[in-house]
Image (cartoon, rainbow, N blue to C red; front, side, top):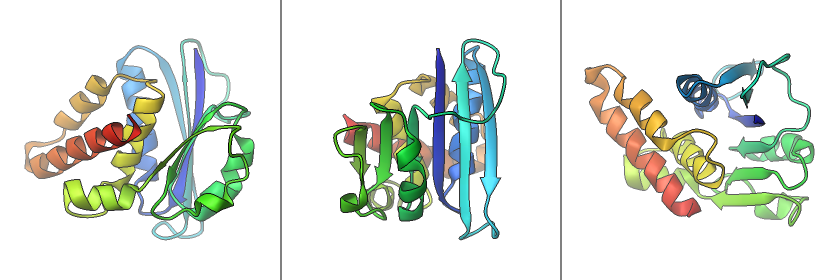
Length: 180
């Protein structure tokens, strides 16, 4: 197994956290993983994306060829990365910020349009868990790591972050439920 995913959005949307979470979960499950972050000119509000590769064998380079999937959190991300996704790949799109009509590969990709911002507001009380909602939808559509592994990683956070842990667990489940 060799799986490549691009995650992209604005700085501050939790792109790097999603990528790190996926890579950490893959390693916890005994696979090899690379996490390659890229930041735009400004951390918060600028562009941010990362490439994660999960593999059963040694990974020679952290760069992608044609990603198997993408989690795209904003319009510029769709425009930049949609053409790169391999035929039949998966694209999870933030329907709260991306115009569905702008997608040029309808029918060529498995696409999940999910209003992550609205769902995050409903289940977590704010927009800060939107990335986890998108991540849950991705894992439902492409179970590259076990949900139980992600939940365990969340629960390993310090006790003072209990409220955040519960919000992230709720956001993860809400994204999965939507994608089901």
